[in-house]
Each structure stands twice: as structure tokens, then as C-alpha cells.
Length: 187
Image 1: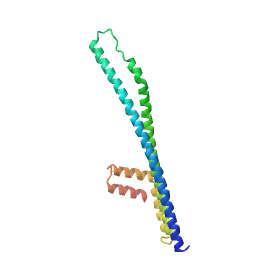
Image 2: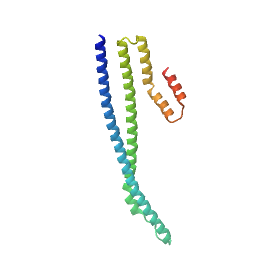
Image 3: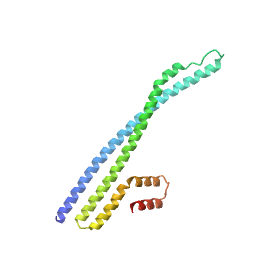
């Protein structure tokens, strides 16, 4: 394969990679926006229900104050009608809270899946780049294997590296500690 063919192949592969990345970004943005919209809708439902419940609690409080004010010991404090009115809202509130928790969990899982997929794609991109460099005699087989092993370690330890990055973002560790931990894992 001559240099022109190698360059043409490399350009085609790069173009295909850009196209695939654009498709993935579009799909990810749509999914993320849809999930966030569904979560916002559930939170609105929760707020409406909580407002209705607050009004019912307020009515119970008013009745209790009136009961205490007029209490002669022989009248019962009655709120069963309000409680009966509240039951559907209480049940719906519990259901919406569960839906919100499930949606938040799904959003976290989807985000984690996107990050894992991105890590896999980065590994695949690094591998393609190394294969091109090897094909073009830019690096030796030994260098190829060394760099591919390092990239594979990064992918294999993705979860640990992600947690270390989160520690840095949260200010739990310093930049120097971060680099030390990452280097220890990747060696």
C-alpha cells in the first residue's frame, strides 16, 4: 500500500469516525433532554399534589383550633372527611415520588452508560490511531503493544479512574494526589 492509499484510508476512517460521533451525540442529547423533561414533569406533578395536601393539612389545623376553642369534652374532633379527600393525593404523591426516584436512577444509569461508551470509543480511537501509525511504520510493534496495553488498562480501570476524578472534582484530593493515584493504576 503506497503512502497516498494509506493517507486516503486514514482520511476515510477519520470521516467515518466523525460521522458516528455526531450521530451518537445527537442520540445522547435527545435521550438526555427527554429524560430531563419527564423528570421535570414528575416534579411538577409532585408540587401540585403537595400544594393540595398542604391545603388539606391547613383545614385540619383550622378545625382542630375550632375544636379546642369550643371543646366542652363531649364533642369529637372530626376530620375523617378531609382524610378521605386526602387519601388519593397521598397515594398519588407516594407513586410520583417512586417515579421520580426511578427516573433519577435511570438518568444516572444512562449517564454512566454514555460515559462507559465514550471510554470504549476513546479506546477504539486510540487503537485505530496506533494501528495507522504501525501501518505507516511510524511506531514499532513494541511501541504499539506498549501503548495499546496502556490504553487497555485505562479502559479496564475506567470505574476506578472515574471515582478518582470525582474525588478531585469534589476537592477531596489534590491535583498531585489525583495524578499519583492515576499513575499508580496505569503502571
